[in-house]
Length: 407
Ligand SMILES: [Zn+2]
Image 1 (cartoon, protein in one colour):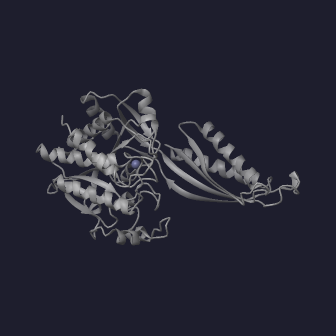
Image 2: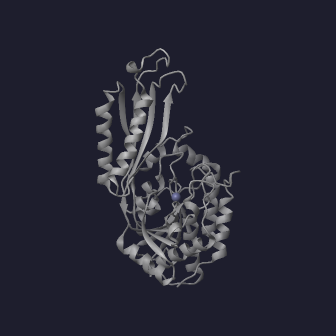
Image 3: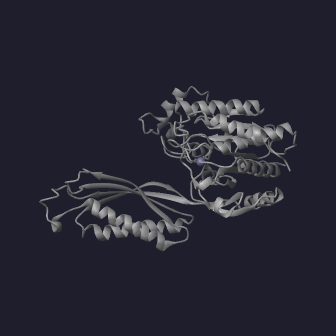
């Protein structure tokens, strides 16, 4: 069994977390912001130092290749270095740095490999500034270069403008379209409390849940809070409260890991002495079964249509996002399990409630995901933390799984 260089991995994690560090102890690196570009330059340098052949594709996916002369299928691994606002130090970065460390260890140990390998930092996974998972969607042909260029960020700039401003040296061809990976592995922090609660060291992901977001606009009437009798009101917020209760009850009833959340609510005019005239809210449904997500959406539609009339409000509904669930590849999960056992580590099979580039890569490659524990389940927050030993264990599982696949 191979052992990666522990202190080197932890050092690079520390160094990368200084780029875009916030006063809260977190990290902010929005896609193609100055800090995220600096993080990419750091990754490029690290890949070069590791002796990898570096490619930066037209959307700024950064790819470090080992053993590029082999004519067999590419074995890829990686994650992302963009973050949410005031996010944690490990989400994404850990998977990228462990991937580079694994390839560097192969090279140093002069291990003979039958396949070319790639460590990848995918562009814009988080979807804060631009819609999520642009890099992996481009790499798998789900979105064209023209469509990526035209994406408009929350600050008004297009993706193309942001790329130009970054001054990154981009290749004109998609490396991953030319060298389609046969396998993709992603190592990531769990971002939930399950592994810690059960005292397990490694999570082997069986599926990644799908997410559907539905935006509902409720149009009532903004009238005087004192002079409008109760039976004459068109209260948009009152109706919103019914939707909130309904989504919670529905998700409990559907079971099978269903979750439904309303975390965004906009009330107009939002004044203490005016009946709320307009409400905009976003419902986020997640499940590992596309059928259950469909069922939840249709039940929501039904409820809204049936009751809006009675409450004298008007409704507009639109789908905001839809990422279908993805099953990971059985044979890869079994291999990860075998290697985890060989390393003497404890594991459990689980699902991922968060989306990852792996769910996109699954469309073209055999795919597996490895989780390590997140302390108190915290993520997307400066409180994000994973013990050094757990980080090292995960990287060793990744490296040995890659080695076995690439033999
Ligand atoms: Zn992530």
